Structure formats: structure tokens, C-alpha cells
Amino acid sequence: MAFFSVIFFGLVFVGAPIARAIATRIGGRPHSDAETAGELTRLRDEVSQLSGQLARLEEEHSFMVKLLEANGSRRSLTGDRES
Image 1 (cartoon, rainbow, N blue to C red):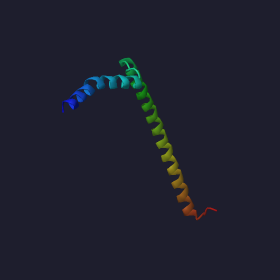
Image 2 (image 1 turned 30 degrees about the vertical axis):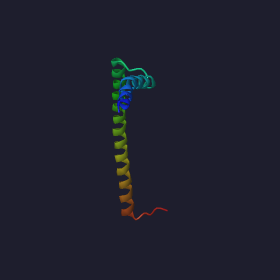
Image 3 (image 1 turned 90 degrees about the vertical axis):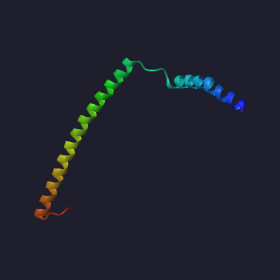
Image 4 (image 1 turned 135 degrees about the vertical axis):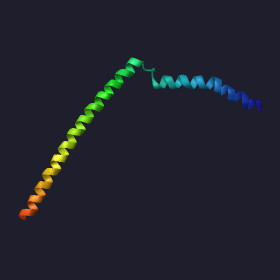
């Protein structure tokens, strides 16, 4: 039983720092606060631009739906058929 205790504590006290070092090396260096703030600002700008584009596309879609509905109602009133 003592053998398993030694192995467990060995893994905890030796293995954990080694695993943390390997994870840091794989993940790259930690980012500074300035880099993180700059990236956050850039992402906010991109989200703002995408929101504007989405609003423009919604307006275009609404306009096209209105045109198609108006064209369909005009055809049904005049009795025109599509060939």
C-alpha cells in the first residue's frame, strides 16, 4: 500500500510541473496584457463590421422579398403565366 502512495505523490509533485511545462511549451508563450487588449479591440472592430454587413444584407433581403411579392401579385391579377 505504501508503494502506491509513493507513486501517487511522485506523480503529483514531479509529474504535474513537468506536464505544465510541456503544456506551456506546446501552447506557446503566454500573451501579455497589451497583446490581449489589442486582439480584443481588433475582434470588437470585426464584430462591428460584421453586424453592419448583416444589417445591410437583411435590408437587401427584405427589399427582394417585397419585389418578388409585388411581382407575384401583379401576375395573379393580370392572369399572366410563366412559360
